[in-house]
Image (cartoon, rainbow, N blue to C red):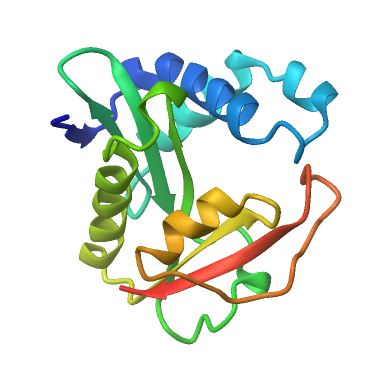
Amino acid sequence: MAWTIRRATPADADPIAAITIAGWRHTYRGIVTDDRLDALDPAVFAEARRRAITAPAPTGVFVAEDGGPVRGYCVVGPLRVPERSGDTSVPSAELHSLYLDPPVIGTGAGRALHDAGVAHLAACGFRRAVLWVYSANTRAQEFYARRGWHAASEPYRPPEWSAPATLWARSL
């Protein structure tokens, strides 16, 4: 399957929100409570993604298409939790999210989005990237490990998070 990766536009916010909810419900059942998954609000996700899409660099939002609608996306940008992000003496940024429409998992869309996000951060002058992975999400951990990421913390769970997560890092 051939994927086209491009910068997201505000018109992509609603499809991205739908992908987020489908991705959460597909991936996080058994990790996040069913009540939380069932209560996900597309309008909340669309507004958050719209803000990211229109944010200045270093924030970047990329979408994957295969000749039809948006099927996945990646958001990168500044560190969200600098005090928990490890060695920030090296210019560091974060891969905030990477979600796919569940039927396209394993088709190369995730790899293409990942590579676009990482390349964007490197082009912005960052030398290190971090991301948070739910500690029970072994499939995502395997995906990131194949791309040069490594676990860089013990599991951490602030009150607003749905489950414990582990910081992962890599050089850019």
